[in-house]
Length: 87
Image 1: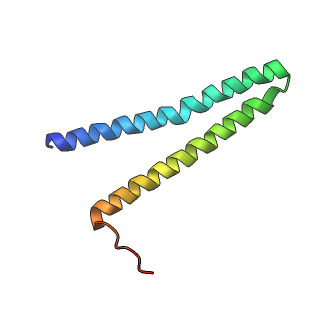
Image 2: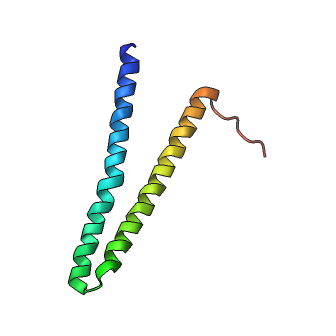
Image 3: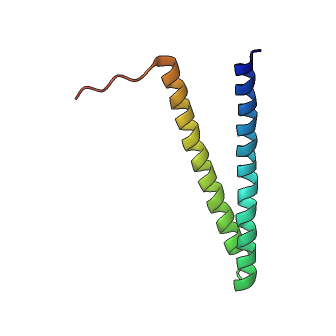
């Protein structure tokens, strides 16, 4: 395995770890802030569940867009640029 392949593999591990932390820690933080808001306003699970669900939805949307962009880039590498559509 040459240096370039090894570097690419290590970057892949780093990217996967950062995405995993992003998917676990961010909803927990927003859920905790929701818990604090619920304690202040007396609406026990409302803000906690709402902020948690909103954060999960946003993160999955962000992951989908990132995945789509990565797959488009890989497709471009394999096939070259797309020809322009004729009107």
